[in-house]
Image 1 (cartoon, one colour):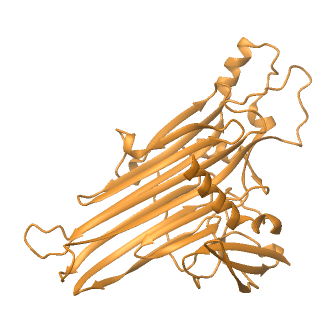
Image 2 (image 1 turned 90 degrees about the horizontal axis):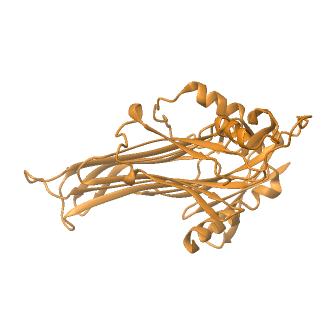
Image 3 (image 1 turned 135 degrees about the horizontal axis):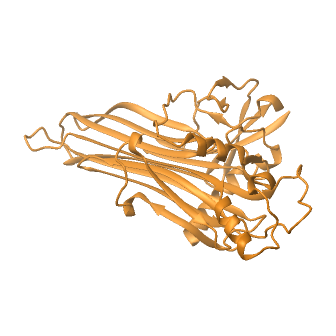
Length: 357
C-alpha cells in the first residue's frame, strides 16, 4: 500500500478522486481511505491509502469540465509528446481560489467550480466560477467567471467575484538512458529549446482577465520567459483564435540536466451593479487561458554545429528528453509515496520563493 498526501487549504472538501489518462478517459480511485492528520502550517493534510495501481493524481468528478477548444498544430503537439517523459522526482502543484466557491490546493491537475445563487441583503446574484488545470503534453490553466444580477437589494452598490488558478511544475533536460552516445563528435552541453504557448483572454465591461507564464531556470536563477496577456497586443478573445507565441532559448541559457520551473496563472474578476436602473450593469463575465509545450530546437542546434564542427551530427530528440513532473505529463505514472508526502511543503516553499523573488 502506498501513502498519498495532499494539502487542501481553507476547507476539507468531500470530493472524490479520479484519474485521467491521455485519452481523457476516467475511472474512480478504489480503496481510498481518508484520515485527517491536523494542520500543517496553513494546510489540512488528508492521507489516502491506495493500491499502487490506483495511486494516481486525480481529477475532480464533481466538477464537470470541458477544456476550451484551442486550435493547435497537431504535428507540433505530437512531436512534443514524443519528446516528453515522466520525472517521478518532481510533482506539479495546483492552487485554485474562487470567490464565491472556496479554495483548493492539490498535487497534480484539478477542476474546481461553483454555480449557485448568491443572496445578500435582498440582492440575488446568479454566479458561476471556475478554476481548472490539466495534465497533458501541453498543461493548461483556465479561469472563468459569470455574474448576473437577478434582483437588486440593499447594502453595497456593487457585487463582485473572482477566480484565480495557478499551476507550478518542473521540466528537466535529461539524457535518454537507453540510447548510446554517437561514435563521432561530442555531445552538446547546452540544448536549444523552443517553447510554444497558446493563450486567450476575454473580459466584458465590468470585468478583467489576465493569463501569464513564467519560465525559471533553477540552476542559473534566471527568469528566462515572462509572458502576460496584458502585454500582448494581439491576444485573442476566444479559444478558437488563441494566439500562438514561440520562444527560442538558444543562447546557452539551458544546459543538459537543468531543471526548469514553469508557473502558469489565470486570474479573472467581475463587478456588477446592485441596481435595476436603466444604466445599471447587471451582467459581467471574464475568462483567461494559458497552455504551453516544449520542443527541442533542432534548427538552432544545426546552426551551432556549423560554428562548432566538434559537435556530433545528431537529432536532439533521439538523445534527450523533457522530463516533466510525472503527475503533469500526458501519460502520468504513480508517484513515490515519499515524494507525495512533501507536496504540502513544496507548495508553501514555491509560494515563499515567489514572494521573496
